[in-house]
Image (cartoon, rainbow, N blue to C red; front, side, top):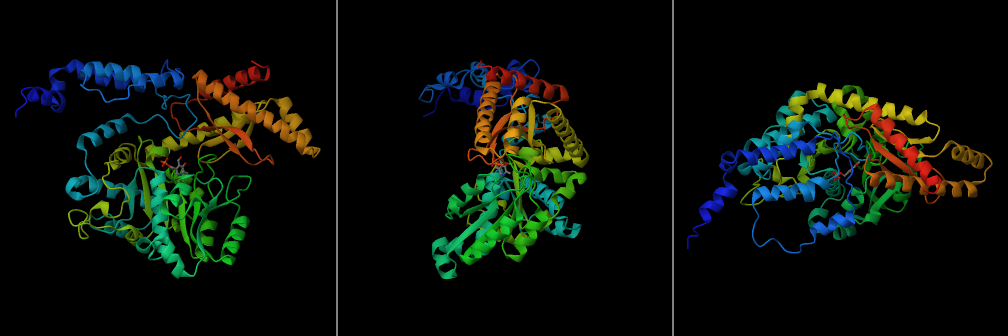
Length: 527
Ligand SMILES: Cc1ncc(COP(=O)(O)O)c(C=O)c1O
């Protein structure tokens, strides 16, 4: 039976001409987007307490009837946009997010409108090639093969040299899944238990530093290896994996007849930004005949500027490398890449079906863990095209300068202690008024560790409360974490900043530190 209202309903919701008939609606949409993106006069962190905001979302059923689009936009503004963290704000320097080039936001709109499904060429015609191209471009920055390699490797039907993934977590999972099948052949079909029982090994392990991202544990749990199969190695004073401890761990596992599936190096750790000694790790992995994976989800973007390349020496020996566009490449979430040194590696994941991803098809879905997949390659392709290597070099250099500024502001301030610095724009520090720093030094020099630990806990409490109060005041945002460089089992609570927002200036950093001093001294005075 025909619904007489159907025509109007379809016109209203499916015809883009609705926007032409009602230009005010289009202006409203664009105006809302624009006013969200502008940060002047705004606070970076929402002011309404979360418990209070929850009440706006206490309707437990889907609306029976739809509302007018205009009224919906008002609700979107009042219920959501007004209560978002303004991640592009120059005073929001606590996480791996930053102001974006506006064209990448438009690219997102194209991705949604085109709604290509990257799983197969039938639903992703040119977009398959866009994806292959960005993978090839990044692969070249990592592995530096010659033109001939990429002429073959970027061809529509050539074996995959990597996958576009939705971020570092799926990238790490993909790399470890490939490594497992390579190191324990047959496990993909037979399962780990059965393959292991025929292999002669007593168990499986993956090794990484204690600073590695928690997605490694998630991956191992998902793969059935278990979280405990991740063996974490201590770090040196620069937060890089301790190579002697690593070698001892290999000896121990060999003695216990445990097969090491992969050694993971981190190029830009989440908490401190440190880059592991990749060259040395590559050599150890080669000697131990294990897979070498580099988690460069954060730091890999620095390979876009030649001046940073020396920091990554050895990355070209990695069997796999994960790099996120949505972290340090200034594109919106979600966008990541997992790259493989040998294109045959991804055969370990290859799946085919009769109706799509046939073996002779060149469909990208043959080697991806995900099924239906967005055209997330578009925003990075857009950004590579409009910024180019020179644009990225400018952005990365500016981040390096901002980082250097913050280091010098902290080091020259009597009431702050720099607790870690890195070349990938992540720093940690703590608020410790000069008299407390002097007291701490005297206790440590005198070997009075019990009292030094008591003082450390006081500072931990102070910094945790400071970070909370600064966040809740909403005028600026830094994050916090706990590091283990001091012999207190509870560690050291530190403030953490990520200095990649190109709209952040020295004046913003000075204001943030001044606010921290003011909150810190108020807390010490009991307010
Ligand atoms: C080093 C590193 N690896 C992996 C990840 C996980 O990335 P995603 O959150 O995009 O899945 C992160 C996230 O911060 C990270 O810093």
